[in-house]
Amino acid sequence: MVESKESYFEKEVEKIRNLIYSNQVQLDTIIATRRYINEHYDTDLNLEVLSRELLVSKYHLLRLFKRYYGQTPQQYLSQRRIEKAKEHLRAGMSVTEVCFAVGFKSLGSFSSLFKRKTGASPVEYQKRAISEK
Amino acid sequence: MRVKVTSVPVQDQEVALQFYTQKLGFVKKLDMPLGGGNRWLTVVSPEEQDGPEILLEPAPVHFEPAKVFQKALFDAGIPWTQFYVDNVQAEYDRLTALGVEFSMEPKEMGTVKFAILDDTCGNKIQLVEEL
Image (cartoon, rainbow over all chains, first blue to last red; front, top):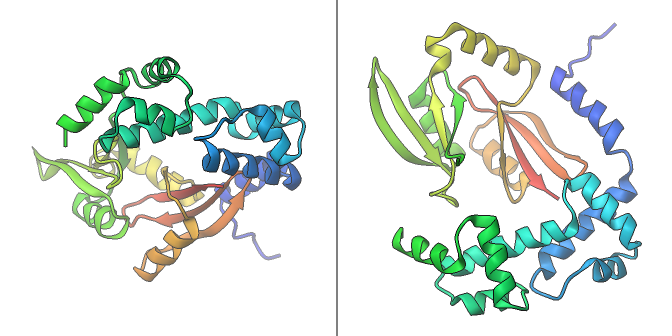
């Protein structure tokens, strides 16, 4: 009998693949969803729009996204917008310009989300980033 | 409380520095002598030079349990840690051309694609691309 050359880790990966990642149709849908968010984070994006674009019910999309990415589409969208906001702030763009460039509709909601996620206001973040250059 | 440093145990700090900078592309951040030939040696991602530092720690050289643990993970094919990349296939092609050995070629798994390389310092390291 030929002994399997698969390592312990490879065997465990296969177990997880069969248990958690066996539904390729679901995976394709959710990967496409994440890519859509990556490409359209600066637009007026919500579950309604995603559901329409991906041709999947809102609730199914929400459930699947949470299952495979561990967070809701809205949480991922916020994360993406904040990442992009940080890039723009480091590049010297004004806070107001950044706010609208990453898809927020109000300076107040942008600033408060930014502070909640990073611990600093957009202005404080930008000052620190520029002084450290 | 902030995450600023994470350790990777290495069997030789100078070999590790060369591998992590010349092959993987990290940038040296801190290098301070600690006596006995040991260094506080860290590298960072060139894309996040103010981000988390990887401490190349010589624990397996000085502390038997660390050596035993590192070898057990390595023999089981378990990566010590993972680094995120934009394109695993491109990194695989680039690194194999540089002579880096992989124990697992790029493979999709759910929402990621990953590959596993040998860092020549006692560890398997996983490269991950989010799909």
